[in-house]
Amino acid sequence: MLSIEGVAVNFGKVQALRGVTMNVEPGVLHGIIGPNGAGKSTLIDVVSGRTAASAGRVRFEGHDISRRSVVWRKRAGISRSFQKTSIFRNETVRDQLELVSALGSDAAVEEIAEALGLGSVMDAVAGTIAYGDQRRVDLALALVGKTKLLLLDEPGAGLSSAETMAMFAHVRELTEKRGITAVIVEHDVDAVFATCDRITVLDLGSVLAEGTPAEVRSNDDVIVAYLGTAA
Amino acid sequence: MTDSKLTLPSPELLTGGRAAPRASPRRLVAWYIVGGVVAVLGFLVPLVLRNVHWLDVLGQGLVLGVAATGVGILVRQTGLVNFGAGAVFGGGAYLYAIAVLQLQIDMTLAFLLAMVGITVMAFLVGIITVRTGHLQFAILTIAFASLLVQFVLTQFARPVTGAADGKILQQTGTFFGLSAKAMFQASTFWPVAWAAILIAVAVAIVVERSKLGRIARAIQENEERMLFAGYRVLWPKVAVFTIAGALGGLAGALTAMHYSFVSPSLLDISSGGSILVAALVGGPQSAFGPAIGAILYAIGEDAFGAAGRADLLTGIGIIAAIVLLRRGFVGLIEDVVKLIRRGVAKTRKGSSRVEH
Image (cartoon, rainbow over all chains, first blue to last red; front, side, top):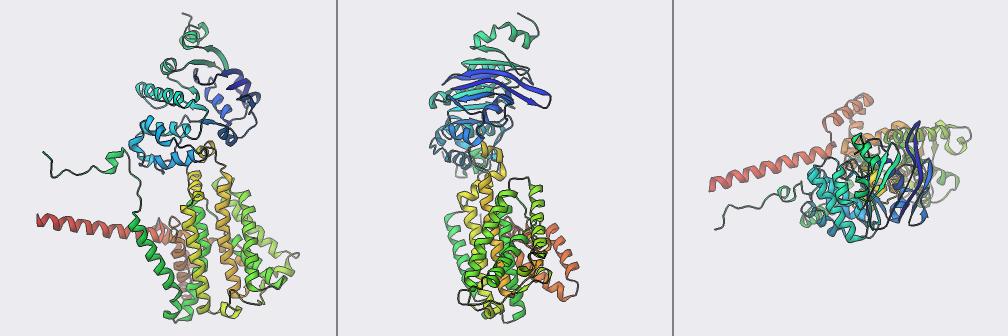
């Protein structure tokens, strides 16, 4: 579904990504983990079109989308959420979900909102609801509108471990139900290992390891990167 | 057993957040009726107000209000503040003058040509300016207004524009049945100005309630999210800028028609400043605030002019209005209405307690 081929990103003299290559299979929940500065969010930015790659290609459903605009990618089915909550604070939850879903003629607003536990705040102004609900609105905004590939940039930011686990459970349920492939960048490693089908570990802009949660958990390079010593 | 004192929880408690205020259908109908009555009564003002001077001042205020409503639409929908509104105001006036003088066509046709011209001009300027940040936008609008003034003053344009001397218009035909002479007279110009302000306010309301307005406001609030939702964020802003520009051009064309004269002062920054100040004094957050602000501005300017200190007193008046009325005159009225309602509610509560 998504193929990233030798993608590099330079910010001045800083190399945020150094020839990253990875594949995301259709229908999976693919987690990306790594220490701060590993290039996780930059990778999401490259796939969504927010940041242009200095080198390499991004293919989506077989098409090279490296030079396509953000709008084109969204209309092709690539949707994303943001590390910092990005909602319309002055609009009601319902109004903003309907507005964002309007382009894709997606009638599933109510279904997604209910599944994310937003039913009771649908007619509330988004800026006045609890932070956890705002994060779920952020996720809902990414989910509505005929999404095929969902890119989530730290959906658990600012949430407790329990809230993050609940959020991941929602993501799992909704993506399975709607046939959506998801790539999740997350700091909460436990949530990623518990929920994702496959995991890519980034370190200093390069792929350190990739595989199932069990394979990654037992990878010596990953253990060194995270614990500073081999098991 | 049911508790007779049991009341429904507030929407805030039910939803976990503040419920969005929505006007009831009854209230909306009441607003439409009041609006319709005011719209009709407005045409009858010359029958009541016999003072030609004040009728003229208020007529000028209405025309200024048309341009200010355009500025208000732009502020409300996009958050962009146009400091160079004189460019479209004067642009509309000059395009009308050029059509009248160079093409020697009927007033109505010249007006329609000027409107098409200014709308195209606003569209092209919009494509360049609205893609920038707020500060850059403000500076670009000033630059465009200055550019037009300098162009009008060039030797190249002098035969058409009259340069610094301006141009007296020899208008032929009629404007929807009104001759140039009738357009000059305050009592016969009034219905035209009143119709223009009604159109401007109606456009502001329609834009606000339209999908375009909704999208533009969402872009104003969170442009990046709208982009990642698949919306092309440039065109809604250009569309709103074009609509606002067309209203500015309408006001300018009517001004040229009224005075049968155009000069570079219509285009310059002070002209745009008057329009912007009028919008701020009235309150750009409301569809009809800028129109009210423009009438107040025209009255104030005339009264201060009579005192012989027009610029000084107008300046003091503007500072006082903007500092004291943060949400403009309409905001002040809203606050007063709220206070009265609260007072009435308290009185009712008090009297019901006494009865119990």
